[in-house]
Length: 479
Image 1: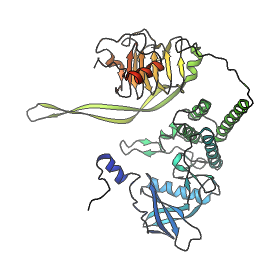
Image 2: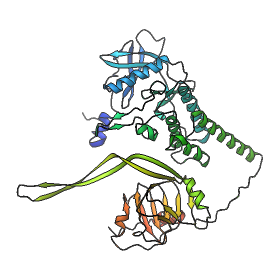
Image 3: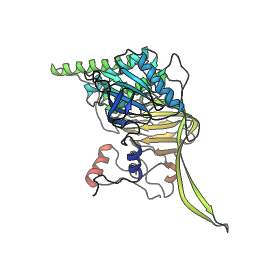
Image 4: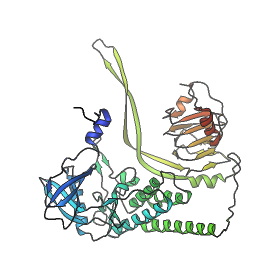
């Protein structure tokens, strides 16, 4: 008799055995937790597993959700106890109703009302309604002196009537009673690390710094960005950029202020729709004159794209060669080993977010060698890019950089660091001699990243060459 279930090996097998799709460790169907019997396993995360339960003493309450703590360390137990304490003391309609809690075999559990997932919307109006509901729920927590610290799609649920409910309060923090920073300890280095979900958590939270309501504002901004697939409509860009600023003081001062910004956006959108229905035409000054004829005041526009940040967390990749020496003294080279670690290193950085636009400058952009620069797309940056003095590291991610500098790449003192999906074109330069470019480029993978000398000068030409001729615009002869 053969099984229809495939045998998985490698990473897939590991995830199937140990990951979120694995079966229950404790919430097995039929098991009893206090006055509740498990009927269905619902899922497992990093700290707990959840199942559907029914009360042993009749069905007056109906089905409920049981959450069992997986980890058995002191910090996890303290957070689980904190969640129970917050739920038991709360009358907020935006938190799940606590029905029971206790321990079975030394394993803590809690029981709440059964809720339904709230899918992340994608349409403009639905995203606005979704975020306003979350702002209202988070605002209620903040007024009680509590910062959630883990607002993300999987922690946003709904009741049958559609009301939004925030779950998973294991990281929630009473900032009035415990204002000091909180961190975990890295199992690798033993040094403090922040808590939260990296995709949504604010930088100061992941660095183990003091956390305020600004951390939840950041998470809601990231929710907005994710709802639009990191490519939001133009009317959302100012809201998302301010909410997700790396500097807490530059974000909205409260979730109420963020909600007001979303409502103002809604009002402007409705006014525009009414104007369109009435046949009113609004003429906006401006004309598209092509990439290289676009005239912009560089001193103003460049500063508008930049966000200066001081940070002490940098991810560095370390590569080394391991040699094995035999008894007679001969050394044999073993394959290079590669590892990645996070190291503490003070850095002054400038983030340049292109916001899906073409940003062309008619004067040179001079980079400061005391800073690192990170250009993030989608979008196009077209300019004469130079270094002021010394060497500048310029990170490129998901963007087009048309560098119009006549200074040869080996003399410009700019080190280009590719982080995926970047296209770099030196529009004024011929391909340099072999061996020159290697010291000016880092992280180039040749698959998602591309380099060209005097090739296409705008995005449309690039796309035509890719789509029509099937060309990969790539110069790698220096290797």
